[in-house]
Image (cartoon, rainbow, N blue to C red):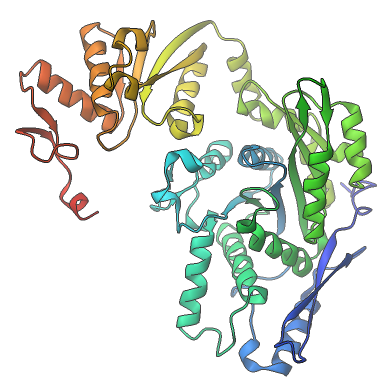
Length: 496
């Protein structure tokens, strides 16, 4: 299928980079200007390298790994404006699912601005539950969303952080990789971002590589990634890179009107960095109005059908179908001059079951990281999937074990009339006694109980105390001096 009539009319503002070898110490001068037509720019890269060679052999640098050819794959870059937590990961995974269903292969990459090397040391309050991949990589839970939506197993090639970026730069510098050159933001730091993306593309061999930039446009910690995405556009050519910006459309309750100014400013800030979005995805409480669509299209110089509604839905698995009804997959494929066909959304059967349950059930979730839903994301997802396939509408009731432990409420009052309880994982003393009280209540009242990891350790302790008559029973993690250590730390854990 050929390109759509509007596909080539809205050119990006690409970053043209010129070498300045005067007294400014070889700094790069960035000039941004529209590029109406640009082929995959092997010549541009060769020119930059030849200028570097002419100036100083120590300045030679390539951001393309061995075996990679510029222009052989296609990139979709997903950013977010106005605020974080818009659901960039869900959108990226949904789009990848639609492209897969059109017969194309997809690779998803998450780039996070925090300086931790991975998410293993992060509190679940910060970025949600930590996901452990098959190769041992501890990462952001968005990778779990990618895996669920695409049915693909991911690895360390699919997550990048500022911590990993710093480590790469330092290791290369210490090993003499830069051949005496002074390491700079351009081209070395942004180049390592590009190198990682291209290594991931090579590893996957996918037709499309979707890159999600964590955080919000304007955050200092993700500026390096955005600069690198501008370079990606310049080096790969505009025919190989498609930018999507998620925005929050504000609707103040006292106005009963959707406002677009924040969305405009966030997208304009992105354009100031050399990136003009090809598509705007509007997150909102309810569907955006035609007036919002027209205004954003006019202000951002974009076809109105490229302004996509992504309102709040009953379940995240409705998002692929909602996007498909707006032809998002076809818009993307037309841009890249790829064929598309009329295919049914792969999640329609699931959402049909979810929206038409036979009955409802309440399940209690007892934990100490309650509040943000993402802190127990895997438990919520597993419960929803199981309930949906059983034709049940599930209501999850939060039970704060801190409240029970501190005597702020009786166990029966806190648990209420749930049909069963789940005690999820955790560690440490805080909330442990509250979990044990919940276990005792469930056992005494014949209430279905599921203990996960630490939650089942609490079940062992409760049984030892109240059935085996070992009142001092505990885990050595919480009480190293307990006289009845029914749970102990593994030897290797003592070293952590």
